[in-house]
Length: 368
Image (cartoon, rainbow, N blue to C red; front, side, top):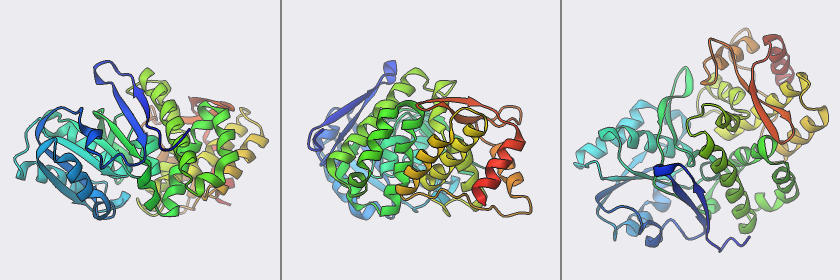
């Protein structure tokens, strides 16, 4: 695959269907937005890191389509994925007199995308929005599929809505400005697709990891496209996570506990997911679902990608107990029973519970 070729992935959801466009030199090209519905105004939602790099270029690209293009700049970081930041978006919409045809553009990573989508779902009971993800994590995961949310101190992404964008514009050139830690964090969401859905993709990542970390355009184009294809296939069958879509949360039950337990922003989301995948793989092995070789294979890849494979000790006297307490707040939990995404065989995942004693063993082992 050439990085210079325009790639598209379709999300098939009847009247809510849309396309993901993948290539370099996309986000500031007016043709990327020419097919969107006409409206009087647009609002770009970005943050203090991405805004200075790209907001003005996006404004110019949108000018032929909208008579007014406004911008709101949010503070950057997972710790700001809050009601207060969300209200900054509503303040901007209301102060500019935006109507229900106003289109929101999420210019940034996963936090910006989640909050912009939630604001779009809520303002006037629903206005259109477009995802313009600038991080690897957002391009391969959070911008696709319509999950929008903010965090609560007691749980991650606990307040939100399913709300699909009109389009996703993945400009591979924006990945050139990512700090290396952010690139590694995005790789966690790329790697997860292998164990749950596509072992050939897992092997491809292993073979081309150096090229990915070096940001070779063709390698980046392949991982973004294949990740989006897998997620599109899952979302088209289970938009609202009634069953199959839950497998996309591999590593997230442990990972969200790490984020909430340490405090949002201490670890990047992708770092927590990477470590969470190691813990979920170990739990799968203790349940007899995969062998030790596969756990070692996955752990080695995650470590080589620059992600942590040793879990942090959370504040409090009972570390494992604190993990369990936080995981019971996970959205997949039912009647206080924690549901984990586990590997029932390499390349296939399931959602099931596990005895607390086994979960404690995994936590103690991974935190040792």
